Image (tube, rainbow, N blue to C red; front, side, top):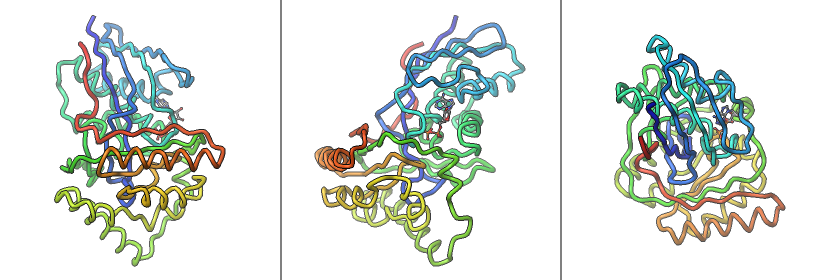
Length: 307
Ligand code: ADP
């Protein structure tokens, strides 16, 4: 029987000003998935963690993705999946995307590399539709491509990898749940023109900052005048967290995905560690449990460990 093990990383979507169009892959945390190709046209799922995610394939994002792969190839085979999840569901660091992207990459490997990265993103987006109600790729794309991704368009799919300097990422996950679907519902549907102008100035600045290794420009452009003012009310201590992390030397940052995780980018590992200490202090004082990660941008995305 053919079997593959993949590591599927967490991701930060939105990157502050790039709502729904920018995302980056993290080196940590990552899920471990073992996927086996079987003769029968069915999917079985086994969870090797304590998150109690559904094992019915049509209710688990990994299952939905694998079913869509099977259907594309006329249901001639199936998959057994074992998931050891380390990215907590609902954390805002792409837990569902890791399962979806990991499933697509593992299936592609087992089937002899017949799909392009863009096709794997298409399959994986079926999983995101299950998790959040919408097909979005700002977690999936960096998870599959690695590095930083621009999703210029979903229909038709147009993904561009953005070269960037080495950057360190500090992520804090306060242990409260914010559902992606709820975080989407509170958003305003109209944007004043002056805010839109400021936002697209920031997006352009951020992308150019990445391309030119211009850390000051990256820092200046990490500003969100549209989504953050609304969503940050769901995250305790957000304003203080942001200003204190910048005082500690972070270039900038904001809500990771739809929260409640908050991320900060730093130029050096030492600064990223200092930023983590600031985050830990704030949540300790607020009496909220948290997980903190100090990591960097993962250039590879989902990686194949063994066949
Ligand atoms: P995140 O941004 O961390 O991915 P979401 O709120 O988008 O969090 O997705 C988590 C939701 O998806 C939860 O309701 C969870 O039950 C559901 N889900 C189904 N299958 C999976 C899976 N394999 N991994 C993670 N979440 C899953």
